[in-house]
Amino acid sequence: MRSPRHFFEPLAVGAPTPLREVPFRPSRMIHFFDPSNAKMRAKLSALAETCDVLLGNLEDAVASDKKLEAREGFIQAAQETDFGRCQLWTRVNSLDSPWFLDDVERIVAEVGDRLDVLMIPKVEGPWDIHFVDRLLALLEARHGLKKPILVHAILETALGVANVEEIAGASPRMQGLSLGPADLAASRRMKTTRVGGGHPGYVVRADPNPEAPEAARPGYQQDLWHYTLARMVDACVANGILPYYGPFGDIRDTVACEDQFRNAFLMGCVGAWSLHPVQIGIARKVFSPPVDEVRWARRVIAEMGDGTGAVMIDGKMQDDATVKQCRVMVGLASMLAEGDPELSAAYGFDAD
Ligand code: GLV
Ligand code: MG
Image 1: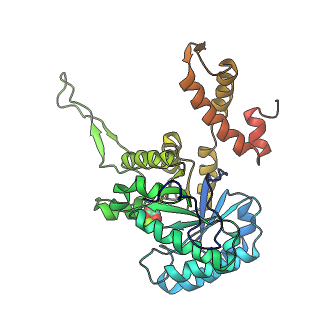
Image 2: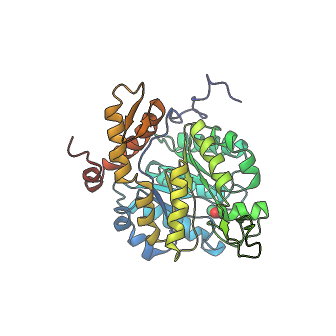
Image 3: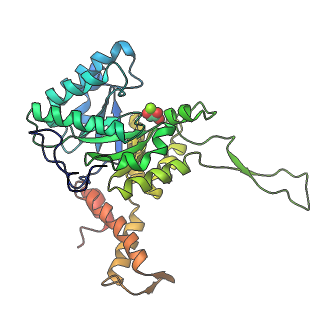
């Protein structure tokens, strides 16, 4: 462990000073694009108007004979596109792959100043983050970057889950974690063949009816990801970084996608990945606090005055703890409303 005294010192001579706080900007959807696809690249500035984050994916889903094209395409897109308020992230190949080193070296050299976050897949422990941390510091120093590049790790191996707290706290560069249910299922030897979501076999069965023991007993599908997501949220919040649900692979099942995203939102996540344009709108809807909840939360805050003591509002007891929950909701809503006049009006901020 580095001593707290040294934790925020640059890891290379001339590298920018690490940030003390993770910038909290809208990141409801991290929309993945394939940078090897020139047609897709041409649409990026239009897409940027609808997204909080655009991520050029270099890892899985890019065939090995397209890896170099994807890397060069990402660099070109970063140089030529106007992303407006939208953040630009990339997911590089895994640390043990033949592409990782050149991915990072080329991207930091060419477009390091345009990149908000570097997503690292298959992170297994703090040692992986330490390696990336030092490498980035050396490259930032070499290329004269003024602002540190932040790191986002995907939680997608059993060992990674076992070490999640240490990963979240491994470096001041850590911006957040995403749950990667597809690789995690494979790593854990789960008996599924899906990218996220539930499974009809993972159920709790209702007890038999003593009056009619032969009658059909309903089974209730459970959430396969609950434990991991909860653990990841705690690890993130305990370390001041942001938690995200990852991919939902059944693009046509917009209902189940919305449910999975909402479970993550309610559990504390700030966003999810979007793999298809149809999921952008789902993420925007789910990860923007509901209008009635925000209006209610504002009322609780107003009636609670200095936030101490207790009051009854519409028969519901409010105290320090509920007012704190309400402040989380309103804080998020006002941050999102800053760049979105429609949302701002819906939340009632315009009337203030
Ligand atoms: C994402 O990368 C996943 O493996 O689910
Ligand atoms: Mg994966």
